[in-house]
View 1 (cartoon, rainbow, N blue to C red):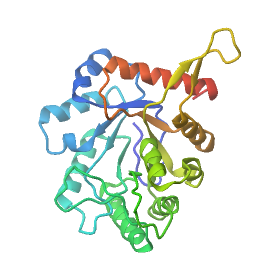
View 2 (cartoon, rainbow, N blue to C red):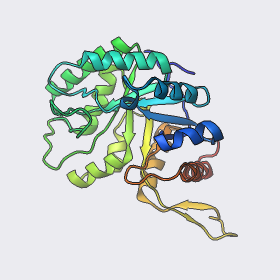
View 3 (tube, helix red, strand yellow):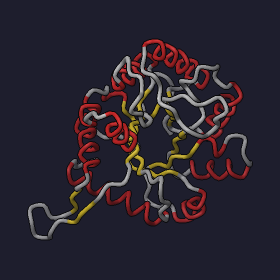
Length: 281
């Protein structure tokens, strides 16, 4: 497995899903065609030994990435040393390909709740960059940070894309681009999401969270026979692929929990659609 230590490139993993408890047994038994699996970090911090053993088993068959909710990288109070030590211990045990969290802050009593957007200012930028460097130094590897949904009244001394770019470049970290959050922010704040994508540093985008997209089979026997994506989210995703090249993509379902068979089918649908447009992915 490729270790994402500072200075080393992060690999392209392909198409994956987020681990849910109800999937674990079937994944270990059936070994479905998944390129990677994302696990929620907090589900395994200081948890039952059996849960850790299960994801260790999983790591023998699939590349794993860890996605956290509790780092609170933009919060004004000190980083939580207990959380970071538990995180480091889990990383050493599981050896994920990379770890990610959210570019946000959280309320003082909010352990795993609302992920609050930051005020995009120079002071906040310096604060966040310093904290990312501390985390990366402690963990011995670079991290990915995800964009969170913006608010209509959000203070923006610095445009969001410029802020994200500066955070990534000054801290030598990477970007996890959540397209669902991006679309939500664009509706709240009235900007064009395609312009947002165009202004991000392509070499820093290492993972995508892809929400529901609509796929409609074309008529057989036509020049467009096969599957056609008709959802505007596909246009954004397509723009990223053209701008960046292959980006590891998590098929994310939040409001519903499909069966494992259903998720594997969605993976194959998206994978096939991408390969029709971009052979070799």
